[in-house]
Amino acid sequence: MRIANLDFKDPLIIASGIIPDIPEVMMRICENYEPSAITTKTLTLTPLEPHKPPTVIKFHDGCYMNAIGLGNPGIGIVEKINLKKCRLFVSIGGNDVKQIVNSAEIAENKADIIEINASSPNRKGYGESISSIVHEIVKEVKSHVKKPVFVKIGPWDNALEIAGKALEAGADGITAVNTLKGLMIDTEEFKPVLSYGTGGISGKCIYPLALRIIKDLYREYEPDIIGIGGVFSFREVLGMLSVGAKLVGLGSVILDKGFDVIGEIRKDLMSYLNEKGLKLEDIFAIAVKK
Ligand SMILES: Cc1cc2nc3c(=O)[nH]c(=O)nc-3n(C[C@H](O)[C@H](O)[C@H](O)COP(=O)(O)O)c2cc1C
View 1 (tube, rainbow, N blue to C red):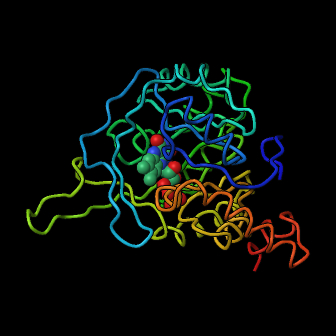
View 2: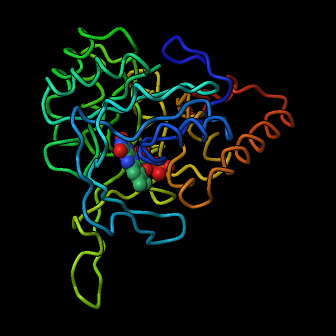
View 3: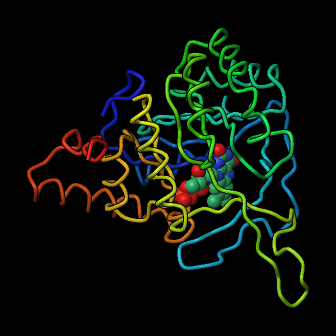
């Protein structure tokens, strides 16, 4: 598969926020499990403290909610990341245009793709809060960096509109989707379970939502898409490819099953393709016109 003029041996990548923001750990995961790419946790110009625990809960089979709040050690750590067998996608965030542009300039030294997080629901002023100025952000970032720039959008009603503005401003592709804001109440104490109050829903529960948005997105603009949301097996990978995603991100499934799941999904996907005599390209966007 070819996306943003880069070739990938298979479509499986690791989504943002799933692996620790420690360069040695990232390098080891790349070496041992060989995802096509690793996306960093969203990194900001200066470090941010995470919210207080609990920050991640499992509330149903394969369904999670998190509110880490973009806690991260700052964009400077990318300098220490050297991946040999996988590409590096650097997720960046910020609460104004200048911070995001500065982060993109630092990310560019190491990133194959720069992914702007315009969708995390877990910190006021960041993530989804900046989706209203996505056009300005992308225009500025694109005028300062040469590497491909993707914008990560949320599973919202206005997802297509936000993606359209990002693409119009020059984004090279769209990552869809981030988590969807939800709430769990502890019914002994009658207060939110997560310390932040609300959290982003991820995992199996959001797969149909992600699929619908990716399909709409592809039908409307045909951009390069990294599909994410509720992928737990090779079947969901096929689903995402069939509605127009070229790469597919693994998130909650790794929290649920560990890193070995990357190899298992890859093996199942390849067996399926071999059995049917198909290539990944044959599946791509096949369900969009149906
Ligand atoms: C614990 C956790 C932390 C996350 N942190 C980030 C983040 O820092 N930046 C980001 O863009 N998305 C973040 N996400 C969202 C994931 O990258 C992904 O878009 C979302 O979880 C949906 O995919 P999934 O259903 O496969 O988990 C996080 C998700 C989880 C579960």
